[in-house]
Length: 98
Image (cartoon, rainbow, N blue to C red; front, side, top):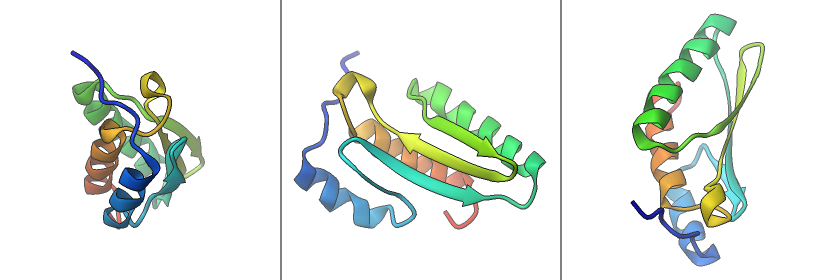
């Protein structure tokens, strides 16, 4: 199945207001979230992994104690694609404040 192309700067600028917890540019979307405990952060990673596997689209995740740093980028598209926007929406549904 073909992967979606990189979004234009205008397309990304139009999409970002709907993802207020995310920042970034055409090279990647980023979100940082602090969970109540280390175990909660690890559980969040497992939940994100389930969604990522379902979508066959995998985020970069950096865990620092109870803080997750997430980056979404479609390497095959050379930047942010619709897959990243959809994954960001699905991650927001899993995390506090989402």
